[in-house]
Length: 347
Image (cartoon, rainbow, N blue to C red; front, side):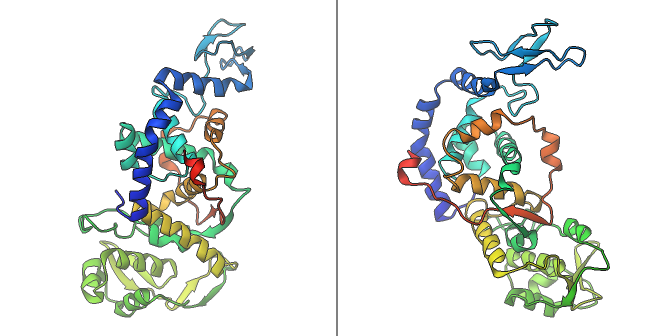
């Protein structure tokens, strides 16, 4: 669980608001009816049996399952929607309420607050993010994932319990880098002090993470982030067994985007700061999904109360396999400006 001042403030705010949210949403049955009513706003639904396909009027009062007017087979109102197979509606609606109030919490915090598993929370959050992906394209700009590598990490046996995870494996981005002969190649770009220190310790002889840790005296998270960035810039190569060597083509690196600018870097850094404040770090593959969640939490002009339920009620089913297989591309969408929530909007 993140332990920053912003994270603590959001945690206490969420605990304070939870009784009001419970009072607003009511019982589990009330929440189920609220979700079904939102889905039923389309007023008509087709029978999903291929041999039928009849267009049915959704009955009033709204129920989850009813019989097709033509074939008399059962139709599920939630089938193939965001709420497909959902047994408990209230935890999902509580998550939506917190998101719309601009309260960012980690999966562990939400689990403790709502009383469901972190796995359930994680699935619900990522489902919302995937559902909102189409929405973000009209509001955002595209930036390289390389600008957010400092927010990327995973835990290993070397990670101290009170420190952020060291950097995630580099394989995906290296494999995905364009190999076109037309791509621009430039001399070694400017490095941070940490990256330059790590670069000077590299040679043609493989060095392990632990050896570089001793040689540079950097913290585990700083060293991991520097190694990732250096590899993305083409300055080092990663060998089997977590061994690092200076790249044969160094100091040549690939410029992935001609529009790289301080503006995009600044936007990326804002997202990095938010991730570090609330989550310590995340997997590289989830950068786009957390960017969407950050947008939902902060843009109160776009994401007013009730908007997430409306979005999810009209969204298709997002399977667990789709969540697992989702990978942030080398350039992803980030919204540059938000409309921060006012105190009265959090009530």
